[in-house]
Amino acid sequence: MADAAALSLVRRRFRRWLDGVGWPQDLGDEIIVAVDEAASNVVDHAYPGRRAGPMRIVARRLADGLRGHRHVEIAVRDWGRWQPAPTDPGYRGRGLAMMRAFMHRVDLWRMDEGTEVVMRSVAVGPG
Image 1 (spheres, rainbow, N blue to C red):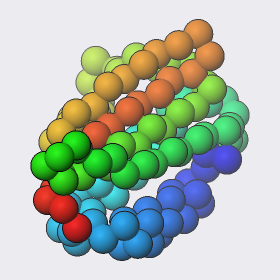
Image 2: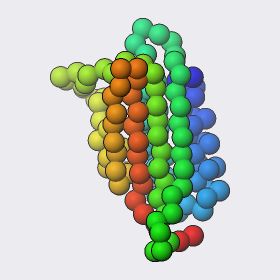
Image 3: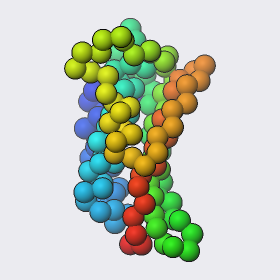
Image 4: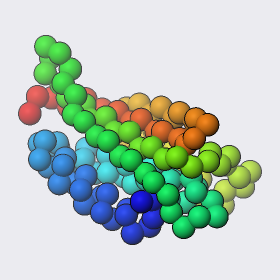
């Protein structure tokens, strides 16, 4: 469920997974920040007026052909409603910008039932 208590669990599980696939520590930190921002957006915005709703996070490591480079791709999905950004977000409203700063590519899909953010990391060498 997408609630604030789930965010620390998401960060811990991603750290373990990234360590398990041999991802460089500094680049793993950037991925964790991006995933945390995407999950936080679900918690904060996807289910207005409700305490929590479903959230799915799927991650996979991708190999890049003969060169042996690797990427991490993460999809964060909710089944809530898209909330347009306020005209004055105050100190908030920078989640997508942060995801884009830390990841090589970020695609956002708004659907009738929910939103999905798909992020791809920068390439790293064979490992």
